[in-house]
Image (tube, rainbow, N blue to C red; front, side, top):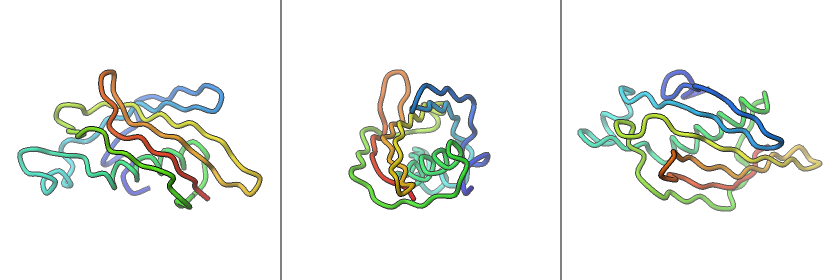
Length: 121
């Protein structure tokens, strides 16, 4: 995994039927924030999408790749200095051809940062 235990760490996991809620903490000292952006760190959208992929892999215990993305909306800036701890909530369904469909949200108690739905194989 590219980012797990370096860019972010999993603090806790809660499972309920086909939903998993990961509480993660972003590493605000990670080098990515020195360039994105100095003095005003912003978690890149592609990094948020990679976190989701890695958490799907963790939940399903298998290597996957993005097959399709129905939508992806970045709703607010995720600044690790202000919002280091966030929840990544994944709702799953699987098809007969082993495609994993997800609806994902990255949020904290007050703000939603990303909403995404897609399929992984």
